[in-house]
Length: 108
Image (tube, rainbow, N blue to C red; front, side):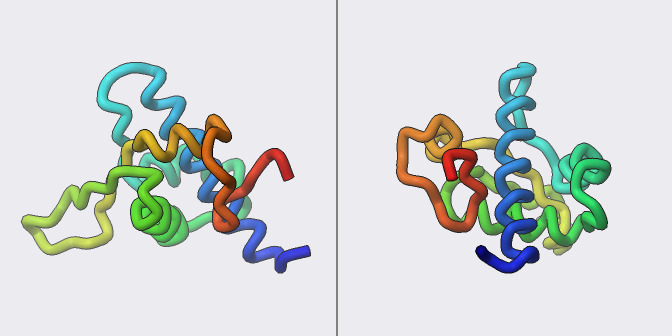
């Protein structure tokens, strides 16, 4: 069994994808800022920090599961990230591509 910290990070990444999918289905652009994601997930994940959410968004962006935008590039503030679910992220959630070991898989 993986360490608890690994399980927590994998769960957070999955929940970020789930929340972004719900936002996309609700209409509009489906893009949410890291702070909004934090506020949504704070009560669900004990001791969650905005930094952890930013790290999850960054990881998911590097893997191609979300499209990441820096909302404050003009001010040089790398902390203000927003994300939107990509087609690959939808495929991961729909289980039409192989699972990613860095993201919680409900099939496991």
